[in-house]
View 1 (tube, rainbow over the protein chains, first blue to last red):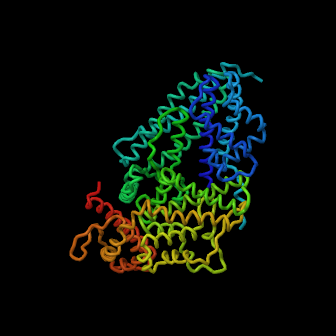
View 2 (cartoon, one colour):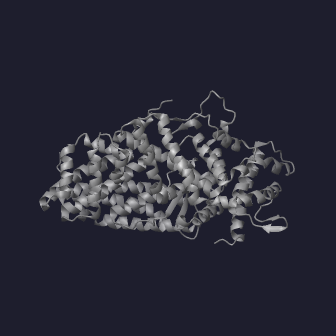
View 3 (cartoon, rainbow over the protein chains, first blue to last red):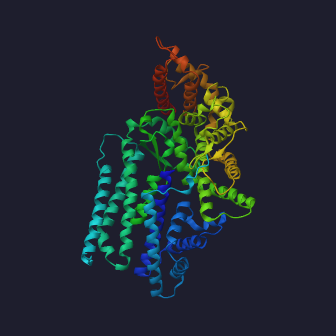
Length: 137
Length: 463
């Protein structure tokens, strides 16, 4: 349903923004919000299974990033992003021991999440024709 | 080309903030100008107050935004993107707020919505849920995702660190043309079901969906790729949520819900259709199971709850639809090409549906308590209606009885299906074969049932 699909893109944009806000707090004040680690782990779980066989039971590890619309949007951004480098930077946000290291990784992560949020908002404004329209009748 | 300097950028951010501020202000002004008239239900007034507060909080956020964005040049662009996100969310509020404002008490089937609210409140786990009704332009009740206004409002609250709406506040839509109607508004419990599903039951149902898909994975011998599995899971969840809402509605009000859905979908066309023709009713689409599959589940649940012997007495084509759907010879298909075998995927749907048929009645079997009363009282209610008397109270075996809302709702629908000609024949000069006359008296019947529902609530001393 067009309305439902648009609503999912907008909800996805908001979920991404919640994470971005946490990353901004980390970059500017070096403070970790409660949701940052959980959210980033969910995104990392999604990134690690891009274009791979994905057992159903692993979807729950993605939190709010387990919808078809989210997967489509993520894959669009990954076409122009170095996935390996991105995973490294997201891990560094979580694991870096230096303030500078965390800040630099957070700033790179913010760029990625901005691209994701922009794309989700684009799809909200211009709902895509999905592969679901391949009718068999 | 002129280069943008820092001061220009600050001015741009101020302009962007002010533009959104003005938009939000124009939306919440609608909530501010509410006086004594028109009169709104309490739940609507509460919603307006909360949207107004959210608007004020958004405006305060925007007032401080230019200074916040200027704090760090490296994060300024990202912060500005948030304005686009907020605007898109406020657009949704804008879209749905006006329909709530249109739904004052003169434009709502208030007796029916109150009765449905009472029925939901009678369920232990759901007693704190409240519903606000809004008027939609679409004729199809099923095209408006319930909960969308509340979800987007809560997203806004999170983005600006404002106040979220109370968790148990649902919003459901009815077509503006049906504002004073009764029969089609028996679909409302389905719409309420969407909110109840998301708010309360989703955590119990989704594991069953995943279990069915895990069995499918085992059967085909491999996991699907992430696009395919998320598509399949979303599709299956959409169907299961829909059938959940259907079964919830039947548990809540009984067969009247099935009849309303049959009317809305023109499913009586299933009766007498050529055998060679496979109609739209046999196809699962993106957001709904095939009607044939839905009515099959209705039939099973009505039988399970004890309603079927009552329903089976009717000779209406509406009941024939349920009888036909129960037949195992039908063919079912999916509208879309899937990465797995169609029949195997449909098996997942039927597995979860069977589980729901057992699970839901243990949680929400409100209507079953009324079956015996319905059997005893409905013939007398029909007698009253045939003589154009509102059956708020009836005299049965020398006792004055106030029929319950569930009895009235179902008696009203059965009368509409089986006895309209009897009513019209009793009116001097009216032809029961006239479509125009039948339409006029159907409208009357709707008003009588709504009046009886209102009276019943008063006479039974319900709050």
